[in-house]
Length: 201
Image: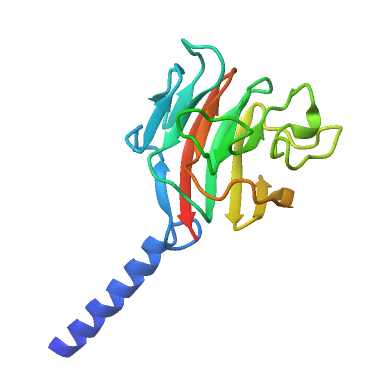
């Protein structure tokens, strides 16, 4: 009887373990930096954006300083996959900057800017593009405004891939920037980040 009980308990443990893993988006190895419970403890602020927890997301919609503001990861990453869920308006100017060479001065020249900006004056580097590196089709077919969206960004050596709502927008080789933290941008218009995860490769 004791033996049967031990077998039953063992099987139940396996079942619960598998069930728990089913909640992870792509299996083990993912680090969650933003979700419905985490605040800003995993990030450094750069600029004067009013980042705050609100409605299960991290939100910004104004700034006390000119130019872009950022939430910058405290850790640096070389090869990785980022998965981020975000909400933007059609006029929102935001994005994810990866492999930032200088965490105190982030630009599209010293990092890769994966853009969120449906109304960018040069639409070829609008939503889903990597600014100055990889263009998207014009007229714009990738739009983020007014809904929740998902970015999956993979960087492995010089190979960079951006997937927007399940569709590959750009895939390019570039070796300008090899490693660094990544950053979430506020540059005008409301932006909400509901879940942000990274998986080092």
